[in-house]
Length: 357
Image (cartoon, rainbow, N blue to C red):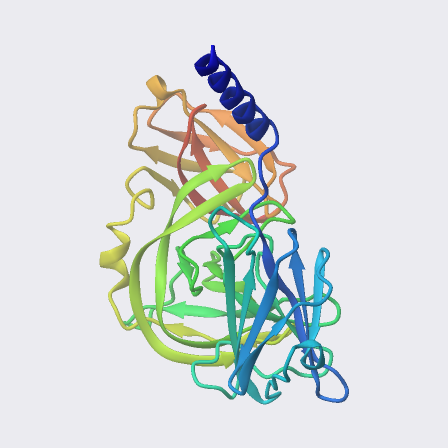
């Protein structure tokens, strides 16, 4: 009976834990900035009250044990001892301790380096700007950028990309970001620093406000698509002429990228670019295009769908043959779209499709 009772208690505890999942501690930099008096201030978003927060800079370190409910607002005067942070550049580390927490992690560490400090990824802060954490609700993301008072965290980089023979590249997807994956989704979704080449050989992409020193670029392929979201994976790295600039909030920088490595040879190895689907002409000048597909479309019940810049499916049609002609509705306006080759279960590949009217 005692054994049965212990088993019953264990089952009840497991049921309560399953029904009420325990929150994982979160501490994330919401804003770091300097006031008119050049004194620093930081705001940390937290979901569980920590025991203490350790702030470190090049000048030293100290603990904060003040008020911490949803948000911890910390200044140098609120620490046990003064920690100075140089406005022209410094390295700042934040360690949040959860001593009452008996599961992993019992502490969270976050570091950002800015300004004229070695290995800084962030520029000096201008008036009205602050440093914030990208994806602050996701504790495994330790990327930061500069933000302005209007909430702008990105600027625009535009230009053209040329291969090593100085020929204009008119198709392909690239990545300038330190992130391992970049995602283009419907409005409001997370986007990293991906580049999609337009049909006229130009590109325009949003980049987070950080310091860029670029000597390579990644070529990517579409791994997953549909429902307004395309996920790209890096397929290889190419050397480019070195490029250095600082991206500031809500600014536009024009830069052409010049590849030093062979782009064509690598492109042939990327799944889904040329082996599964070919479409031509592209751009579509009138209302139709010819396609060639290498997979068995009848047995997989394939169809095309056309995705606009907002990630919306605006047209689709089934296909019964591996080659044929498609006539698009005349009311589709000119512009740049994605054409997906899909079945009910998956997206096989995707290609940019430019329509000229």
